[in-house]
Image 1 (cartoon, rainbow, N blue to C red):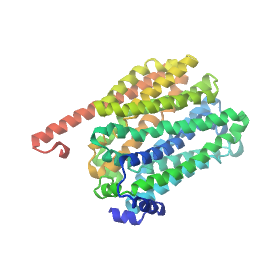
Image 2 (cartoon, rainbow, N blue to C red):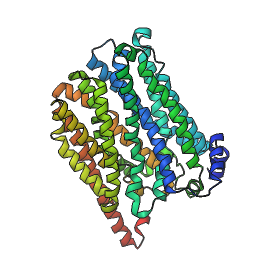
Image 3 (cartoon, rainbow, N blue to C red):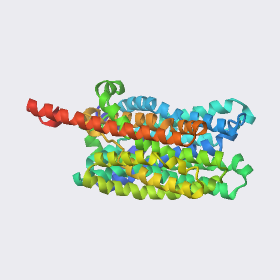
Image 4 (tube, one colour):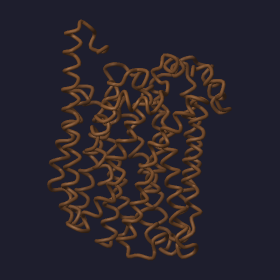
Amino acid sequence: MSAPIAASNSTPLERDARIVNARDHKIAPGEIAIGVIVGRTSEFFDFFVYAIASVLVFPSLVFSFVDPLTGTLYSFALFALAFVARPLGSAIFMWIDRKHGRGVKLTIALFLLGGSTMSIAFLPSYNQIGVAAIWLLALCRVGQGVALGGAWDGLPSLLALNAPEKNRGWYAMIPQLGAPLGLIVAAGLFAFFLSTLSSEDFLSWGWRYPFFVAFAINVVALFARLRLVATPEFEHLFESRELQPAPFWETVRLEGRTIALGSFAPLASFALFHLVTVFPLSWVTLYRGEAAERFLVIEIIGAVFCVLSMLASGIIADRVGRRAVLGVSAALIAAYSGFAPQLLGAGGFGETVYMLAGFVLLGLAFGQSSGAVNGSFSSERRYTGAATTANLSWLIGAGFAPLVALALASTFGLWSVGVYLLSGAVCTLAALGINKEWARRTETAAETDGRPAGQA
């Protein structure tokens, strides 16, 4: 479908955004960056609100019929549903994008995301409605996953394509800032309610407020993102097929190798992502009996370190290259996996070292993990290919990480979590090596045929 048809099906919000942009015909990369950060922060806020509740609330609210460890494992199993549903959401919303326009797609996706998250705030307990509480929570989690698959707006690609050549690493890092910023806000809200309410009041009603906040944040993020997808730059890239959705299954069939490599390239950072956010919170509350609010404060401090480390990753990547940063950070994560998990069981000081060191490594690796191989996609399938790769990366690297880590640690000990993290680092190094070799062979073949390497 052409851009004009898509525009004719745009939402009133998108048309209002286009009027705003008509006052100034050019959007600077800095403005795109702000829109990207707002959008990603809203998504990760939803993500972390659910993740924290899956440790502190759902085991006792929804799985009260089992012991706390089993209840947390069940809760983590539902946590994974969103990652399983994300590829399905991408397929559905790419179709909506082609038929009705990206404004319609984005509006539906973000209202579904905010609505699914807010609906959890009204969730009755297992003691009130029995097993129906589990099914309702699972339905809301699937709704979040489908919406996240549809919330892909191409703005990171727009940002990368508008970034100065010498600052590509810096601008590649910017969308990733949404993760630590979303964690800071979500953890801060939960820490506030935990510290000011009694345990009974928190489990009765206090935990529900962050889920209400999520809907308001998504509405703000929606307009910020629609303002950018209505820009002349986005329209031009849409018309030139740089940001035009291609059929999902066609993209998988023709770009399957690039999708596979792109899905495995960030596994080290994605595995570490949950091993310094969701899993340690479950471990210290279950096995060390620590106050959750204290550990949430440590996570907030760690997230600040993560932001600073991400900023450093952008500067370093512009000097030595993104692949080098990913490779070195994966090697450092592999070294970290050999001793760090044991620190989590070594008392307060060990926990702090584990968290802060982990967040610093996460910032370096995660800061450059977005779209590591997106340049290998053909221009007409880059939009859909990038979305598919991101969804599969999260599914393979992060979706089951809290469940697997807690199951391993509770069965074999914390050392087994290090082995699990090491496997992610090995996958990243292997994917980067294969991608480099593939690029070298492509360039050699192009030179042999007398064609430019980009046309190989």
